[in-house]
Image 1 (cartoon, rainbow, N blue to C red):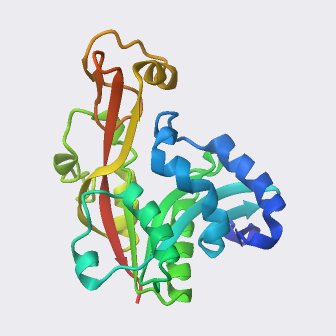
Image 2: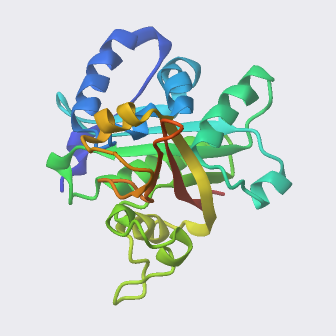
Length: 254
């Protein structure tokens, strides 16, 4: 791979129209399932990332094409908080970033929220470049620690397996079985713990049928595409609930 043809662009308040074009390309290759996008914390805060935390959002560009993208936020955590990360994960981190900023707190930790790769560029080491750029942001902002609530990218194939058990699986070489966990471990991260309540999605039965193109005519648990756990449908209350587990991982970037 000739990485010299790729360049990183960080967002800023000055050139938002340009970044809207780039975001449209990112959304075109995004692999997030529709139901995940209905997470209420995501709906409330996501679009404001590019205005409130412009230095922490970026694109990897190849000419006019978006090769990959990354989103991260600064958090203000005490040592005790960092050493005892919460059972909540992605939702907690996104909301905490905005609350810390509103309170005027000094950032101490970088937290990654998402890294995306254009499928046309997969297999070219793009993920390593995205991780490396996030480490560079952390160093630039004088943040010694880089954490992330990671969504394992093969867990959806094993929805009945607990996350605690899944993260213990290994491949023949002894590395983590899950490719995304393995990538971060090879880049120097360590697995900290499972965050069992990383994301919460709730909606009516009709909304879940629309989001998943499934029919739910009885209460109970259902396995749906790209969900890491079964979802819970309650016909009597007309509500469906999905609680997603992720995995806290941590880099030391000193």
